[in-house]
Structures are given as C-alpha cells and as structure tokens.
Image (cartoon, rainbow, N blue to C red; front, side, top):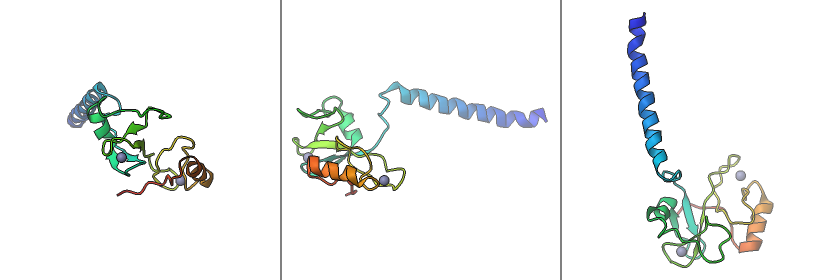
Length: 130
Ligand SMILES: [Zn+2]
Ligand SMILES: [Zn+2]
C-alpha cells in the first residue's frame, strides 16, 4: 500500500516544485510583466498591448503632460495621443471598456458612468476589439 502511493506522491511533489520555481522566476521581474491587456489611443484609435508599452520601459512608457494618472501613456503609434488601459471584462455583463479617469465603473451596468465619461471626454468608453 505504501509502495503504491509512493510514486504518485513523488510525481506530485515534483509538479509542486516545478510550479513553485515557475512562480519564483515570474516574480523575479516586474509583477505585471506577464499581464496582457490593450491600451487604446484617444487620438488615432490605435490598440496596443500593454506589453509593448512595457517592452522598453521606461522609454515606451511616457506619461503625457497633464495626465491624471501614470497609467495614461503617450501613444506609441501617433506619438501624441493619450493611450488608456482597457479594464478587464465586467464581472456582471462581460463588457470591456476603456478606463477614462472620472468614472471607472462599467458603462453598461452603470449608464451614469458612461454619461460622465461622455461629458468629461466626449467619448464612448465601451471597448470594441479591432
Ligand atoms: Zn495614437
Ligand atoms: Zn457591466
């Protein structure tokens, strides 16, 4: 009985060790190095993955003058627009939306949030994949 269980236990221990090593290696870099989400430029509309902005950090990560937060970066495509992050899909309705400062709630679940963004930025914050 003990012998029978020994092999799977060793394999399991091996898997745990590998997973722990992978996590340790991942943790060595910036915590968000492996995160992917799009950034959308409010001027040219370019959709660029955050990894591209982080690729040549801090060269590609330029916070525009007057930006409300350092999560806003200068667009890599047109070099003058403000690129903003897209929020993870809303847990309620699955909508992906651009994070405009002012109101970060889901524009579909909270029409007043969409209205606020429209008033402040003149834009619709719902993200449409290109
Ligand atoms: Zn742009
Ligand atoms: Zn929603």
